[in-house]
Image 1 (tube, rainbow, N blue to C red):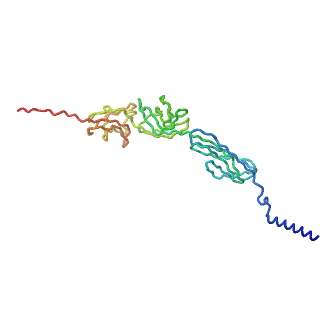
Image 2: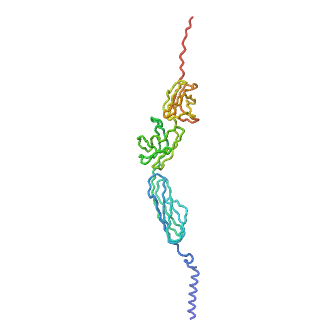
Image 3: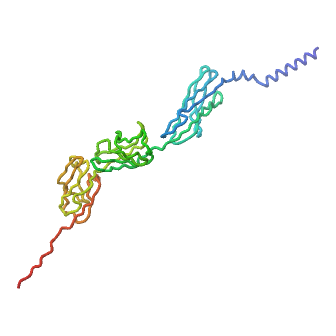
Length: 324
């Protein structure tokens, strides 16, 4: 009988030793298992065709099976990773999350939610596709001068498109309404200026819009005073020359008429759409061909036309016979 009790005691001690060596129960040490966590995400728009940059908006939901603190981050298909964010859940339920991704070129890819605590889980990737239409670029402008004060203007560049559609040209924020029947072209547009034409003293801002959205660069330009001819185009020193100048102001305002480096004497100044300046060739100008132009301060403010200063005519000396 004593021998049987000893065996029971030994078994009990062995069991106790096994429990002590194994340590406390796992459940007692760590508490209950973490709640379930899941996530989903969608992209808007899924497909985009148009002018870039474009912003893709991602809207998602994180769902949990019980109270917990969730740490998560957005991961992108190009390898980009957003900072870790935290949401506290006081009970089972769901909460909305969101992110944006702005791209300036054609791209196909996606973004996902990656939960890193209290469990590791990842949503499905929200895919999207962007196809960018090249934006118009204005590279130069020109005052065409085709028949009346102000005249036609043109802009040159790339990616204007071959059809007008909802596109238009803005000058100083004013919509162009007269394209003179000239078709919309991919690299060239011609139109009547929709605002008053002010040579040199005003800087114009040109851009192309699609509806109410500016889709091109802003191009700034001053325009020169312009005259088509000099009347006459040659003459002697002291000759009065007429310059018919488009959109000439009522008074010179510091503008002078130059022939080469010499200043001409203005005898008449008539402002207006069909303005006219009369100025005399200085007597100090040597014979030769010179540029005639308008200048204000150190700036040349007009186009240039050639004027030829002729040599003064001297009649040959008469021979006088001496009478003896």
